[in-house]
Image (cartoon, rainbow, N blue to C red; front, top):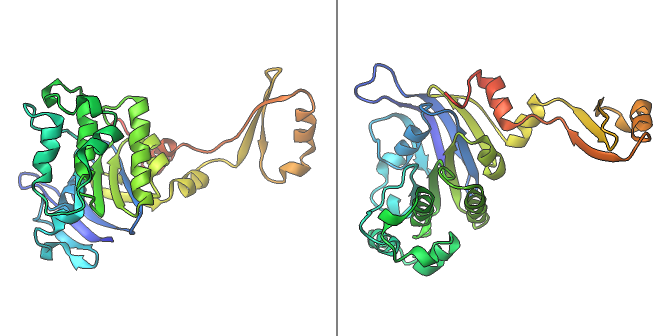
Length: 283
């Protein structure tokens, strides 16, 4: 669906490129994530792909067609959820959605009321957006990106500014979009979000991709193959997973008391990121 080869982009006033030869591809129906700290080039890469920045070097193809050869029909195909909500504050939420809906020729426009219901804003859709909290604006941002039923959707920090409940709902909606066959390119510095929604991720630092793989493979590769066992008497012990069923020490240990908790020592995606890149996500 999306093919990128040796993508280089430099802002006019900068001495060095922000994107330094990126290579990646995104399959149809895949949720693909760019993970990295602020300033790594995540948003810049997306802006190239949705044609805000057109002075780039390298090759970008969408559905096998050079991005530069797409006309305005491209914008019917894509949806964009920006990191910072950019609504008309004096208009109501519903008026904002209707205004942006008028920009499209699509006959697949989703019903406004259903969209507001989806993100728990039905009771607020006739309020001016200036009265919305940041979280409400982000949810409005989300439904604006999908209202014309696009095939490709770009989300920039989709859970930013959301409380845990609404963040969970937005992540579930993204998974529902994937299940409907949509192709999704998400950027985030939230490793938890990436782990929950992404089929594959790329770590990006200083405009360069460090590694690309599934979250599961990355955690398996960089985690330890061990097991932590805690008994109800408070004693804990670590065991190797190798030939665990034949490990007499393990068998004797769990006979001491009932098992309270048992879990593998899988690295978190954030730990993997730091180990691979040597960078903190707080940069």
